Image 1: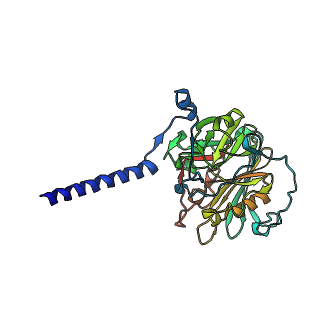
Image 2 (image 1 turned 135 degrees about the vertical axis):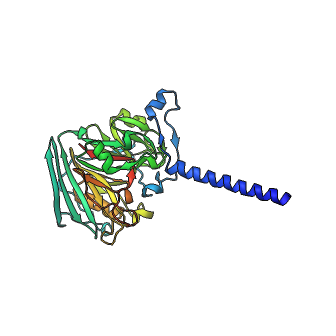
Image 3 (image 1 turned 45 degrees about the vertical axis):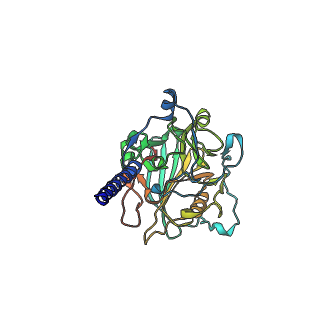
Length: 348
């Protein structure tokens, strides 16, 4: 009788533990959680800005995150300001960079759009056995550079395909964003609204000011509220920075783990005032090797970017132009298939 009771207890305990494990997995990756913005929470009497340490990467494996993060240079409130446009870029003699000179790399003009103060030329390059799609964007106003959340809702596990979010926001051009919803830390400011103010230790962010100018900051050096007060309009927390002041910002010591491997990549860069490049590289297939972070950084520099930033990559890397899927997003090389993500960067 005692043995039978012990067996029943063991079975019951096992079932309960298994059920708890399933719930934790569903809660982490499947069950949607809609949150109030940090500003709303503060107004309702929350503790305000909360500092939380991470493992140093600030990323979740579910978003194919690169573990590499850079420490920001010291400066006013910890940010690095781009220099004025210099035209010709100085060459970096370090052989390990293996940079492509895009002026000598052939490309095809895929499509163009010239309407309503928006000029976009979409080009396809072949770099390091990889198809790389570059949207060269010139705007007449900074407010045309926008971001959007999946289902127009801030929260965890709220996702939809880049093409769906793009269509819902009448986007002419869209790329995936930073997949903020896969992490619990990292600043989130979108369209001037502060959604998350939890600092991720070592996180290096891209700040887009209302003027359209790009800044690179380290979350250790400045709070989300301070960024908002100084005029931050968008803050994307993924990284690392690829180019700062017209020079490659990724070195061999920082390029670790998946960052050293060739993968699909997404990046955005600022060339000059209201002149941007949106870049998506294919990868993980027999036809496309993908790019390492350093290869991507070198490519962004040679496109003329003064400041460039790495966004979520891997299966998330997606470009939509005029309602069409431009690249070939894939997870594990198993055919073209968009991944649902939590946010996009787009032009309207």
